[in-house]
Image (cartoon, rainbow, N blue to C red; front, top):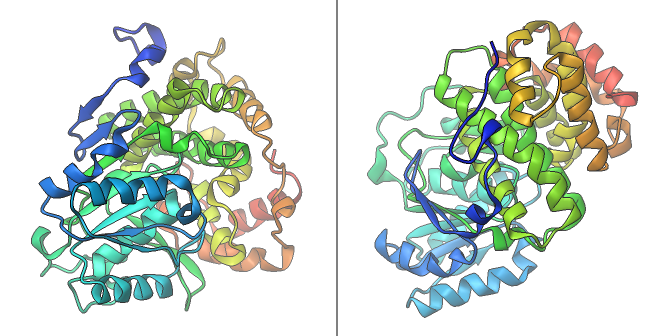
Amino acid sequence: MRYDLHNEQGATGQMKDDQFTQAANWDFPVSVKYAPGRLAEVGALCLTAGCRKPLIVTDRLTAKLPFVEILRGHLAAAGLSHGTFSDVSPNPTDVEVVVGKAAFLAGGHDSIIALGGGSGMDAGKAISLVLNSPRDLWDFDYNVTPPAELGKDDFVPLLCVPTTAGTGAETESTAMITDTKRGIKGCVWHPAQKPFAALLDPELTVGLPRNLTAWTGCDALTHAIEAYIVPSFHPMCDGIALQALGMIYRALPKTLDNPTSIPARGAMLTGSCLAGVAFLKGLGMVHAISHMVGAEFDTQHGLTNAILLPIVLRFNASSIGPKIAPMCQAMGLDGTDFETFYAAVCGLLDQCGIPRSLAEIGVTANRVDSIAAKAMTDTAAGTNPRPFDLQEVTALIHQALTHAR
């Protein structure tokens, strides 16, 4: 039976460009505020949430961009004093979280604005977890029972403002942080800590360089695909993942061709947010490996995902048969078989200029065993549609060193 995503915009979930130039509010899974230029509302949002002295947390590169000063101006216009913490790496570390906590306390701040791509938002969210608790950051590890004594009122208000269309991290407290002692990337969170709002302003992504537009877009693409093929029963996340996949597949080439297009940037930012909601269902082997490659070689996460996606799709092909046709149809492809789907994904990666091997981004063979062993411990390994063992993941990484697609 054919699976179609019909809505008032037409088949396969396509939306009209002018919808991405209009304002919209969504209240699932948190309050989401979308519109071009909506950064101007940041002061009012903070005041409504009771924030009087927020700390902007972002990464070193984002801190130098013009919209950070614009954000500061909006906060000042609303009568809010504020500070900025930007000592954050592309792959944030637990040490940086400790330094950020100290900066928050020293400045007498009462809330956090997590600004940026994955690094800025992850750092901001991780800092928010430990501010009012003597607990260590890794007590909030996703793989352990969260501290039961902490409730919603024990966490400071948190506002997330994404500046890339990739990570989709703006609607949850989950944060990927490098554990400097174990040399792994781990996920921290608490179910009672959620952003009071996510502010999606596609104008913030317009100046993103082509390579980062491509890499972060491929991150969102990977989120949508991996979330959908997780085998557990979650029809809500499945529907969201398919909608995200269709948006991203169509909008990413348009964004690369016309980087100032607000409709294209808006579709990417919306698709990224949807994909981030969908992967509450789980992720898979791409992320299990990519997290640990990032921990060992400090690689850009979306780029690493993009390199690994094709070879992992091949590995999973025998276990995702019923999922292929809906994905093909969401993407608007003519065929509904695996080869059609695989070719379309690889074609998009080619358009994005994604390398065809891990070696091209500096990954070396002498670290494969370490990466593979750590990947087996990643949360995403347990939700991959095809179970794998250490020998299989090691062999796959060795192959990806020279030929990932």
